[in-house]
Length: 251
Image 1: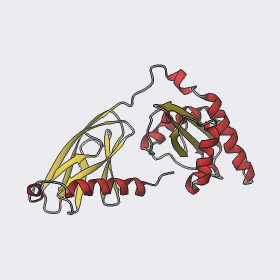
Image 2 (image 1 turned 180 degrees about the horizontal axis):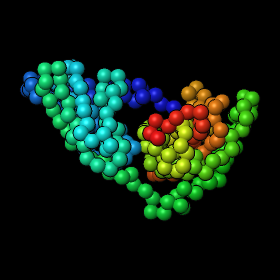
Image 3 (image 1 turned 45 degrees about the horizontal axis):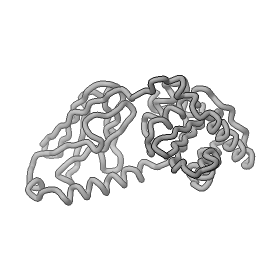
């Protein structure tokens, strides 16, 4: 799975570039400027890095409505996590007491027009992925994982989001579909055209990636779920192993 440090490292580079290109006159402005990497409207389950200027000082950040938006510190950055529908004012302050603010709105995540049909889509590929995952586990002396309906539905929902990064939404989906424990996700996205075996290609990618390979071999896992969605010539493949010994942080 992708590590937060890598994701936010990429964001840091983009944020720093934007700061370097800013108008020099703004750099002298004592007021604190607060922006959101993904804009002022988020879907439930999304996160967005706060863009705070001037660059450099140590800042604190507070949400007026933690039920809608909570704030997490990742490396040197503040990250807004959209929890549920609502509005929150984010207040940022420096050590001198100067403040700046930003209003963020959380809307409900979009759902398919026919959820039942969407959750059962591409089942042939998904079942083949389960078979191949269990083949990898057997080769490593581990027990096969039975499918779980909650995990299958959650993985398919997440694949349908069409994103290339792990988000809090992934873990919230587990709870939404009835899995109230922890779980680990794998994802891969690639061009579907000319690929004769989508399931095998996804598993091969995960085998070649140490972190994804470890997820398939999680000894504590008890069940597995898979999801596959085709969008604009690309295929989004997800798998999740449910771990009844771990806690879902969004429970």
